[in-house]
Image (tube, rainbow, N blue to C red; front, side, top):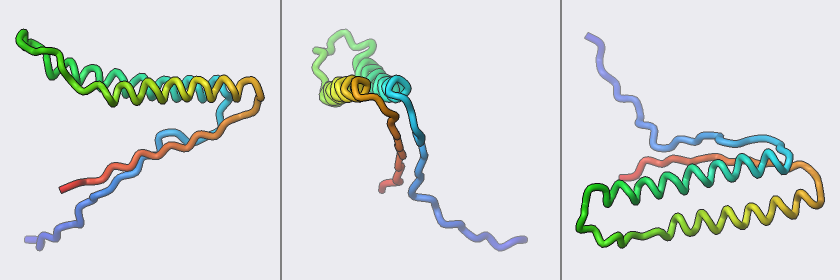
Length: 101
């Protein structure tokens, strides 16, 4: 029988989500799509908390959705300014996941 050796547990993971040069239109599409996915995720999470509960007063924290909508507006204004001046954009986005506890 082989002796068992425990491999060290991986506690951190990095995912290179976006890495490249983009036109203003491409960058705008990418960022808006990522933000829309996150906004919809939070909306669905909020909905699942109250689903089927007819006594729910519909009080919930929407601050994260508000923050993401604000970021979306900031990005839209940024891309509008860049579009007027021309040029390409570089986007580098890495997601870092860390095991807690």
